Amino acid sequence: MTGPDERGAPPACERCGLAVDRRRFLQGLGFAAIAALTGLGVPSGVAVAVTPVPTRARAMVGGNPAYPIPTADGVQIDREQEVILVRWEGAVYAFNLSCPHQRTALRWNQGDSQFQCPKHHSKYRPDGTFVSGRATRGMDRFTVARSGDEVVVDLGVMHKEDQDSAGWTGAVLHV
Figure (cartoon, one colour):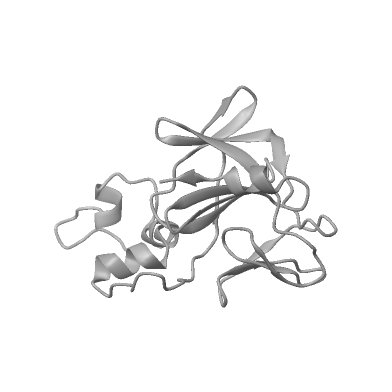
């Protein structure tokens, strides 16, 4: 931030009253939103790189975390609850933070818009579908439900694609 302007007023970001600085605000938007705001446009169906945003549950509902429904495609990680929240192409998913192969924390790879396990390099699409590597199934999904403008993640119901295909496929919130 810079100092006061020539009239002695605080910098614009301090005057607006927002608690988030410009860099954090833009990181939270994701590429698609920034492209739209700047007039670049992003063709439909094109994968865009997004920076994962750390998040925390806004509230607990019956012992389960509730998060604001993401307004744009992106990846949010709640390390405390071990949840990855993803909005991708009109759908919201909640995943277990751990790789289903050997429980290592997954990471988002911006270069190819995929999740990757740093231990054995298994890769997954943003919807949790298995792509390649040592794992034998997609990322484990939690049941999700909409409550107003929030998505509630049921930590007690985790769907494993190879054992509960119908549950895994249904563990999605369309927005």
